[in-house]
Image (cartoon, rainbow, N blue to C red; front, side, top):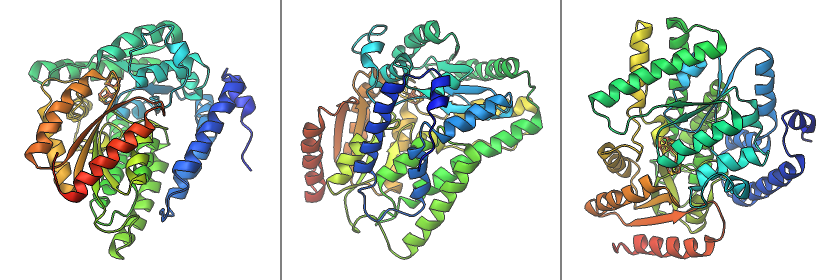
Length: 430
Ligand code: BJ8
């Protein structure tokens, strides 16, 4: 029997009627997509529980943390350094959403042809459906794509708590200097917000927490290299999505426990699909909760998603922070340098992303690459052409998908993905 959180949601000013509708839709989608899978690892029970409590227990935990004077920082991009938020004893929450919610409300402020991810974070707030936004003390935006950059201006007019980090467009020495200064400025902003000073000890402790989380996610990624895959792409995607809002220490423990179980499965030759099933890498725009559409279609068609080259995936944990620093200044520098290794399509050039795709395709032994871009996401849509070339060079079948959060194109996507998997199985490159 689930706890009743109505009074908490009421205190946070949510639209209770619409919110109940949203949770109902989410719960149905989860049952259909997730709980219908066969052979799931036992360790996924924790993540099922997290989803069943998506606006419950974690919201309550953060509400309690605020009573203890901890500040809550909401983010929309992988570039925001979580280590610094934790170093001031803050709570860091990723706020990107993967559902078509509040679009009508959002379109009163931003154009219809804005990407679904931006529309969703605006829509969730405007429709009174996101308890996490209401709990935040600071919303951190960034100068990545044009859509986000401009939407944050409006989001600040609505919420009055947006702070924007400047992210360079190029990774040359000038860009790196700009970014290092931005990381320091962010640390000062958080010290001012919390009234707490960051010292070496705190930064070392928070760096370890975030690195341990990355290491656990790396373990999961490496286990997916096995054939048969010991976990479905859907389940692995969910773990990655939950990493953005769960308590980081608890999350790491649960992922490591899951990985122990997967390790045993690998040794026993147990998988979630037959050995030799087509293996697919998905690359492109991030997939926030509950954006499970493409994975569900691929795996429902008999293939396995074995990796995500995206911010909800490899870009989040692929590089560890060098924790070997002996001064605050050196620590900040190493943090800035570590985040500069994220290969977002907002950078030009962005060749490291292509090299990373080659590495991943080899390590995960993929039979096909699907490039996924959210409609109107210009950076990823354009970069897809380079990813296609990489796939051609490696003689790996490639499919480019452009979609949004609606379910209207499900039939069309099933047909295209089905045809793509046939190409893989016949060993013919289109
Ligand atoms: S580091 S990918 S999290 S910016 S989907 S809003 S790019 S139009 S999300 Fe991202 Fe940071 Fe880059 Fe990662 Fe714009 Fe594209 Fe929309 Fe996007």
